[in-house]
Image 1: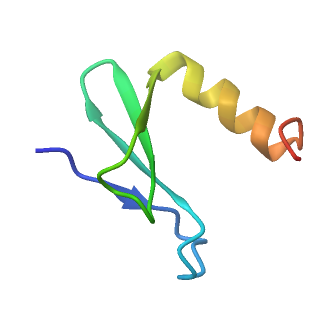
Image 2: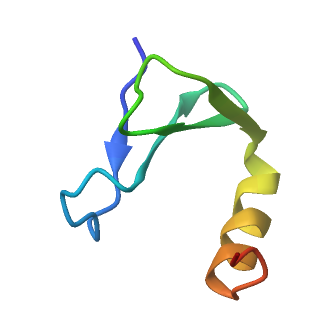
Length: 61
């Protein structure tokens, strides 16, 4: 069974993602408003790079 968790900074407005890191060699990411919708599957090594880009503002619209 996949266990999902939200960020502790989630404001409860539904505008967040959930992460599951209990899958072998991968991290899953999904939209918390659409839990049965599409998921991103990233290699564990790629997750740290993605988060660094997000925190650095490289992906801001």
